[in-house]
Length: 237
Image (cartoon, rainbow, N blue to C red):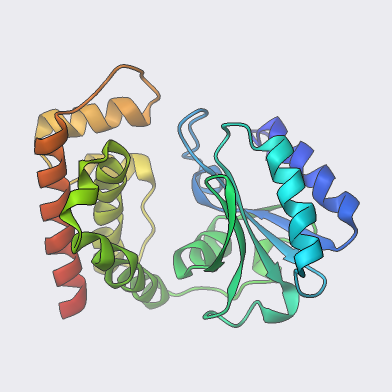
């Protein structure tokens, strides 16, 4: 926890001050030791004492608007009484807005295996232990869910962000299906199904180097094709 960014502690203080957020936990790159300042998202999960009503959501939006200034700070707000309901949607702050999403199987696995608490209970006291098969199932769900949707829309891959994310996510998905283990994004870059020149550019961007770009059309084609193959493989399993 010594490397936890200062904004997370400030955010934790704001949430504790509300009086109904009981736990704040860290998942994602920060939990796995792969956090790169200025590049990685901050993936957090908060547990609440009761449902997150419209009034509570307004209070959360105010906090995020104040603190999330280009920091990619995301948080899922889960009513503690519904933690075991894997299909339930929860208020989720992501990319500057509050939406409704499930707490994904991958995030649950990250919490159970690598997560830590900022305040409240440790993740392992809340989330059950996950098996290798649980991780395989979570990876399959992501690949045949959102990524299946994305693979049917080749035009969205022109965006450099989705192309980079797709290449690393496909590598992580294949690794999880094969081994039942979680792969960090930095490790996934090295396992991307891409030419050596593109892997080197992905790695540079992952390390926070500025000005490193890839040819958009060629990169889009490589990433989209990789997604189509990986999604098809996941459906066959």
